[in-house]
Image 1 (cartoon, rainbow, N blue to C red):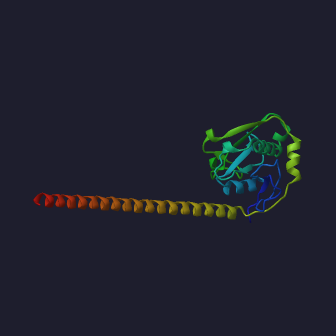
Image 2 (image 1 turned 90 degrees about the vertical axis):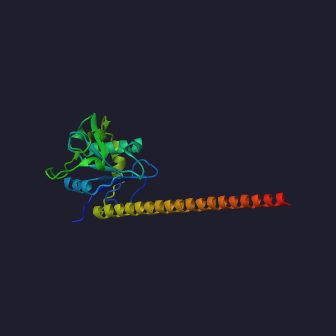
Image 3 (image 1 turned 45 degrees about the vertical axis):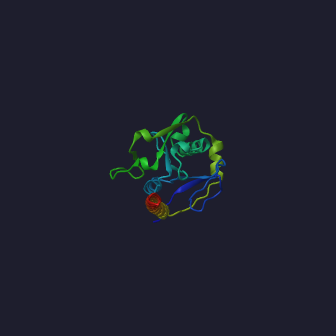
Amino acid sequence: MTPRQRACCFGVMVEPHTEMAMSGKVVSPPYTIYMGKDKYENEDLIKYGWPEDIWFHVDKLSSAHVYLRLHKGQTIDDIPKDVLTDCAHLVKGNSIQGCKMNNINVVYTPWSNLRKTGDMDVGQIGFHRQKDVKSINVEKKVNEILNRLEKTKDERFPDLAAEKESRDREERNEKKAQIQEMKKKEKDEVKKKKEMEELRNYTSLMKSENMSSNQDGNDSDEFM
């Protein structure tokens, strides 16, 4: 069975690889948010997450698992405030208990910090490093945000495993190209260094020959 997921896309209407795309406040470049429909889809999102993904969940309560996909080179501290707010409200709005409560905390952390062991229930996770878990407070439910996201919802069924493999393959190719470029630069540097050394040796040799010729000429002048 193909792994399924829900997703929200900020700044554009639809992205072709999402299962559920939502258009939030316009952010350029756009971000994509994935949300599992149930604990089984949450399990797929845990398994096939990307290093660029940031996981969101209502603290100490049951809720949807929401993932924000960052752009390459970004960190958790680079998330725009509006996008962070939308993610937090989306999680709160998809919590049976949390949606009815005020002043709830939403925790978020990089996907790489999620810990999954064999004895955990389906969709359940822990953390490798608690210090890498951040928190944002949501004072109350804001229907304007949820309605804005809901109106542009578009459900899709992507192949999460294939997307993850494609992403990882691209990263491997990029690293391979970087290594090849580094080796080429090192080879060029060695070649340049060798050429400079040969040039210095040649110049030194020429100077020595000139000095020898001058000395021979002076000796001849003295005998005349």
